[in-house]
Amino acid sequence: MSIEVLEVLKKTFADPGRQVKEWKQDTGGKAIGFLLTEVPEELIHAAGFFPFGICGGRARLEQAEAHLQSWACSYVRKGLAMAINGELDFLDGIIVPLTCDSTRLLPGIWKHNKPLPYMDSYRLPKQVERPSAKKYLFKELERIKYNLSAYRGKEITDEELKQSIRLYNSNRGLLRKLYNIHEHNPEAISNKDLYTVLGASMVIEREKLNRYLSELVATLEEQTKPPAGKKKTKLYISGTFINPPEVLDYLDESGGTVVGDDLKNGYRYIQDDVEEAGISPLESLVNRQLKKKPFAGYDVPSAPRRYNLVKASQQKKAQGVLFLHLKYCEPENYDYYDNLQALEQAGIPSMRIETEFGDTSLGQLQTRIHAFMEMVGGESNV
Amino acid sequence: MPVAGVDIGSLSTEVVILDKRAMLAAIIIPTGANSRLAAEKAMKMALEESGLSRDDLQYIVATGYGRVSAPFADKKVTEISCHGKGAFYLNPEVRTVIDIGGQDSKVIRLDSQGKVVDFVMNEKCAAGTGRFLEVMAHALEIDLEEMSRPAPPTVNVAHISSMCTVFAESEVVSLIAEGHPREEIIKGIIYSVVERTVSMARRVGVEEKLMMTGGVAKNTALREALGESLGFKVLVPDEPQAVGALGAALIAAEELEK
Image (cartoon, rainbow over all chains, first blue to last red; front, top):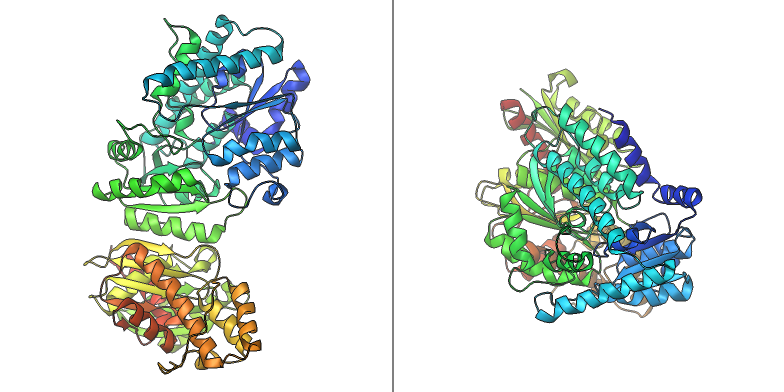
């Protein structure tokens, strides 16, 4: 089955810089990059800039080695390497969310090696349940809004921000629909295609995305027949990124289907909408951030991550949990033991795989994923 | 109804033919540069040994790293499931399987039904595998036979600090240059593999009985040191290299019965 818009989105994902470069040429506009996944993109969009999600590219990790230790995670090293080798030359600015030690170091090193006209950090609160968190975050978003306004030379209005929020909510809603279609009928859209669309949604003009997604969802809803053939083995994926994308091929070919995840380039990117009515749009952005489910960057004492992990896996009837961690990701390492214990107590089998952007032994990875599928599914057709 | 299991490993390829779960043939040959050719050749030899033709085989399961490109498989199953299946068939009391092959090491935990409940596998490099031992034997100018001879307890252990095959090789060369006796260096190499394997095994938890499979199980010194370190007796089947192919053949038989 070939759906035209799906092919367009696949092409976009395969060459992430193409759309933004075309857009800049056509409009003379500016592009602001961001590291995944907490950055309030709505603010970038409201200022009329092209928000570009940085998530891996062709640059070799070695190109960042003079500036970052090899034990900084490969996501951060890859981003810097891409900046250094010119792969991100279309960017006029960047916002880095400070979620761990490596991201905290990155903006300064980036600035030193590849200064951009607009460079900012997003200092999100770690203890989101403290009463001061809301007040703090409001000021922080006000600061980013002010800086973006200053870079544009004109203040971002509430109306502009509201419009961007509406568009983003609509995109997220459509992506969740797509996820839902996959969850209930993996034949309709494969693991690989689902995450390809998610990846493409971060590097495409968001108005275009909205049209494409509407068409894609409508087509799939129309075409979708009840699931046929062999029953798939349901998996929940926890960690940082779907990386390398081949992981999804290995799941597809061994009868596995992803029913939920908490990944930066997965469900975490689309799970929370921003309230559209009532309060000021900036306050809505604050509330969205504070109600987000915890991830390795911060925890919520009243509902810790492990609790969400077990609950989500059970609700989705996942037969196993695949941890996909980036090597040297300290926050994930800290969480892992607690997560593992919680899953063991709930009787949910899991396997942990550590990968790196740009350097993963694929044959090994394939064997481990197939073996895990044989273990939890009892059956595998490679 | 004869069935076959083919295990295409990085260093060796095995074929086992079963009929009503009785072994008709077991062939072990080096894989060489072309895993497809090795699989074809081992299959031909196994058919000759069993006096069967290809058409007699009702079902073929391929395993090992070369399974993906296996020429004649009805089904492909990972070596983890196959070693688990084979080891449990040989001894239903086995709960832990340690499989160290040419380029991979794995620890597999089984339940009382022989089902795989957990496993760990080494990551990308060949540290602590058959290839590691081969490289070290080469550096010491000895054969694998000598490497496998248990040293008396009186022999000291020359400490090898790196598990990286490349670094360990240069360490061995330095130890030779420093005049350390060969037996001490061999013992050091064996201990370094054992340490790594034990720490991997502890990650999934070790339960008796423990069976060692894969080519490295033929190294007597290593399996003795492993048993000593774990505090368990290490069972080793007659042909530890063929356990994966045996498991694959057993899965083939099950598929046929479905």
